Image 1 (cartoon, rainbow, N blue to C red):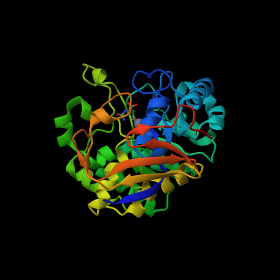
Image 2 (cartoon, rainbow, N blue to C red):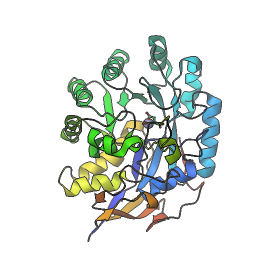
Image 3 (cartoon, rainbow, N blue to C red):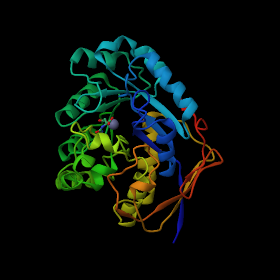
Image 4 (cartoon, rainbow, N blue to C red):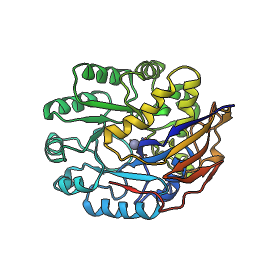
Length: 351
Ligand code: NCD
Ligand code: ZN
């Protein structure tokens, strides 16, 4: 049994559900789950209710985050055709802008070219534009990155055709980056059948060829691992209107460490994908005196031990090779042996 020490990890794609979805998750529970997973900094998505597409909504969400967060948290602003005039004001508060090009949970959607142009013309050039883009929408995003000569980050890339398109764009030195989720690496459409509603998310789980392509590109084209932690209650998932999304912030590190023990990537590459690159892409601050201690002991992921308010994981019953033992955030013990010791409000908001 060996213990390894890692830097605090960064998950740049989480849904913390404030405001409007506090019965699924809130800043206190979502960041408790993050710490239990070895994650000391998260970025929260804007598809809340109301969405974070006005300066007022974003300021309220940041105030709530400041009161409740246990690890460090930054928030995305959401692009919306009706609220597009707010972009400069949103750009002063948010870490980055999120544009939803394809269908998923929540009302945020951009389907018209004038709104896309406004995003690329008026969003501050020193802040990232992230996209939910699937299939040919990835080509739209690459085109915009080229036309406006500014970086675009692609969320949860899940298909062979998408990762190959991004590899082609990178070969031409276009300013694009991308993330993949652990569920798209460790689960496929066969698991979607087994899991039923608990395996339903956007993008949907891929074919074996899609999964293989993500692993093939993990050491070059992929820039980071992000979980798309999207908690919904079990009652909602078992209802007749299943909301897409699965939790993940608590299980990503142990899954990726398991892949390290299987020689699918090196520990050095894991740190790039889960700490160094996310910080670089979103220009996130350093966290001094912060680290994660992990024990390389076999264990089994269990829904009962999750800290997310939703209380389940699609990886329930899966054997992994590691266990998070202790998390130190700015010199303080934030998590130890199953217990989150960081109190609500002890984390910082970014910027
Ligand atoms: C996300 C959610 O529940 O907010 N759902 C999902 O299936 N991924 C929305 C999203 O990120 O697409
Ligand atoms: Zn998401």
